[in-house]
Image (cartoon, rainbow, N blue to C red; front, side, top):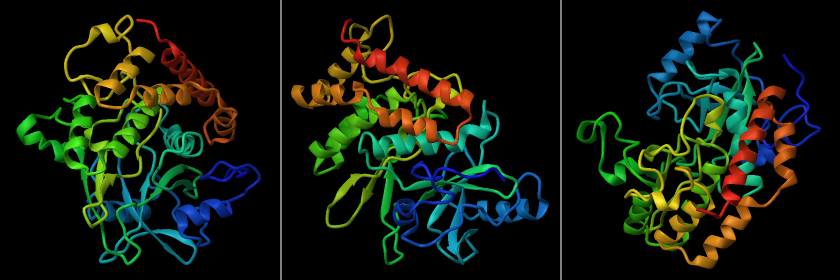
Length: 333
């Protein structure tokens, strides 16, 4: 087992396990080991069976395998049948480039979103199988303190599209402008939520998250007609793992073809200024956000350095970010 020198959640230096800040935010101040009581899903048959049984009971959709977890005797355990899990575990995915880096990538990207850009994110951390393999764990945001569940609907559901009525590409055949229209239609405080959405689209572009499809944006019903966007989740630099495009949605930013807002067919600062204006944000607000997301932040470099990525992938992550930042700074058509 590799020695831990930074908090495997906040990435703060000088911690051999979760920092007090991480324990408070992710684990409700409970003391929790960062080492799972399981050797490996792939190398241990008994563990593999336990995880397979758990997977059959979890209702969270998505391509990557997810497992329900609880805290029991200061350890993260698979949720027993009949109990409600409070955490979701994502081990390394299969059939992508650099699969062993995926968990650290997601943790780093989520921490940058929260710590640097103050984007509300699902509380998250890394944990480790006894074999040393890294896994990503996130706290469920749809659970109330009394154990009841808030209603959550993703934007594919809000748009009324499924694989049955829109084909296998249903969660990609859309535009971010159309998502903004759904926010205006369904969220009473849409002005506030629209800005949150715009900032998230800027962030996804800046950090090469090419998997921001309709099911990776959701609305949560907090009761009393309080509908709002959920905390951000599934944020990671997908270019490290797949050769994808700038935007997950096939139409990109605009619902109609707008080549005049792109430079050489690629999005830049002009694209995002026009997008912000088109969805109804004031010009001064758009310019302020573009300035915020193109500013230089020493903390980004610190978090990359402190992350659990390999040195090679840290370099790639940093270069991809700088390339996108340069494009976002470019205000020429």
